Length: 162
Image (cartoon, rainbow, N blue to C red; front, side, top):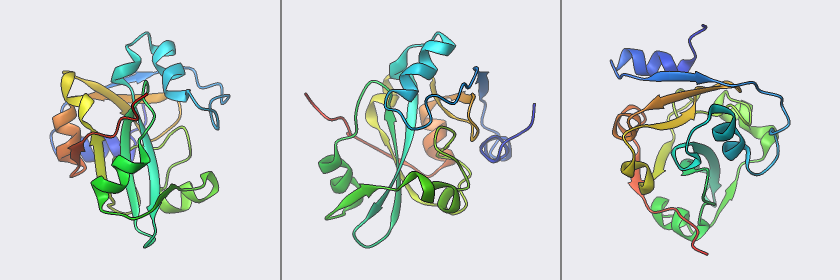
């Protein structure tokens, strides 16, 4: 198995993790529900699969959010978390240049630059969560506190109620 940047960061920090691979058929690349499909393919609870959402503030700051597959991100809460007046998702075609990752394979670890990162507090209710390993078809399974430590993330409520 080839190590991704995310794995190398965890190895360097001596953080324990496991990997889980699934067949990437590419159909999820631009669709909603990709993280839920990943959970289904791996036979795991979708609440434990956290998608990586890259956004840009009105000041052009790039900010990263990790949200459970079963929830949509609340933009008002995301703005409050990072202190922004306005926030919008980064366009898919910009993602690779900004982060080094493609949509569907974006990890909160090992991006080209270190961006402020926020993880939905629901992650803390699990012993282990899953995030992208940095390539489509592979997930990292690790303790949420370890993930936060590795990417200097803050926990906050990001859930869209409703």
